[in-house]
Image (cartoon, rainbow, N blue to C red; front, side):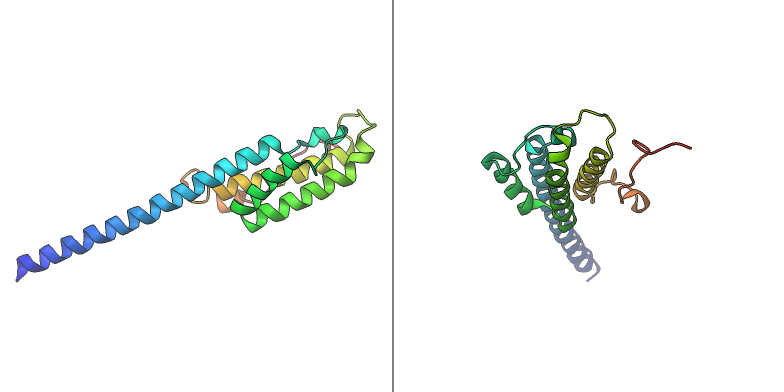
Length: 149
């Protein structure tokens, strides 16, 4: 009777280990696909300094990568990306003619971009031991472009 209980316990433990391993492997696969989707998106996404040029956010190549983003991104990443594109398009007509470093509109566009990228980082690192702590998950703008007293 005792050996049957040990045998059954070992069988149950190995089944649970297999199940948790499968779940973990699937989660890792999904997070890897997210990382690749974010990487692909960021290589095609115009950086904040490109607001000084005539970059077209409606180009087919960029729209394809934006579609990939919506497939894998968290709701917060999608929201922050939409806000970034809106700020980029609003600031672009003003910034095309300006080469002044640290222009307030550029700082605004840059902070929206950084917030989007920071949320992508938090999203793909959520199950990692290297994930940002709960305290540091929210993006905080640094001192770039701020007046120092």
